[in-house]
Length: 250
Image (tube, rainbow, N blue to C red):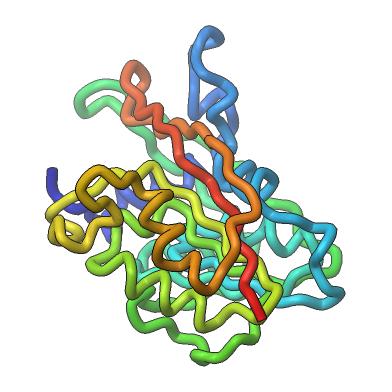
C-alpha cells in the first residue's frame, strides 16, 4: 500500500464526507454498522474527561484533517488550534470555519459520482477554533507545556516517526493535562520504516506505549472506537481504533 495523497480533490471530499456528511451519505444501507458513524466527534466524546478541564483551557488537535474533532473540543469550552500537514485539508477546514459550505462529489461506481450537501458544525458557545498548516514532526506551536488537551486521532500510524510525534505532543501538554490517542495501527512502510512502528517483537502497541510514554504519563482510560469510511456506495472501510487517555505527571 502507498501513502494517501491528502492534497487531491478526491481525498479532501472523502474527509469532508467523513467529518460533515450525513449518516445516509456515509452509509446508504440501513443494515450497515451505523455505530461507526460520526467518528471525529465520537472520538472526543469517548476519550475526553470534561470533568477535569480548567475554565478557558487550551487544546491542540494534531493531524486535524478538516476539523470536526477540533469543533467537538471547542464545544467543551476549549481554545483549540488544529493543524495538519495537508494544505488542502486545512483550506477546507478554514472554509468550514468561515461558513463556506460547498457540496461535494462522492463516488458511486466507477466514474459515476453523486453530489451531496454537508452538515456544518454548530459554532461553539465559549470555545474557539483556529486551523494552521503544520507538521506533527515539527509543530507550528511553541514547544512548551501550555495545553490542557492534546488529541492525536488516526495519526501515529501515518507519520514517519511515531515516537517523535508523541514526544512533540507531550512537550506541549501541561502537567495534569490529557493526551488523547486513537489509532487503528495500520502501519505502512510508505509512511514509516518498520523499525519506527509502535510494535516490538511480541509487544502490541499499547504495551509499547506504556513502556515509553508511560514514564511521563499515566494511562487513565482505554476503549475501542469503530469508524467507517465510504469508498463507494458498495464498498466501505470498517476499522476499530484503540482509544486511550493519558494524564501527564507533574
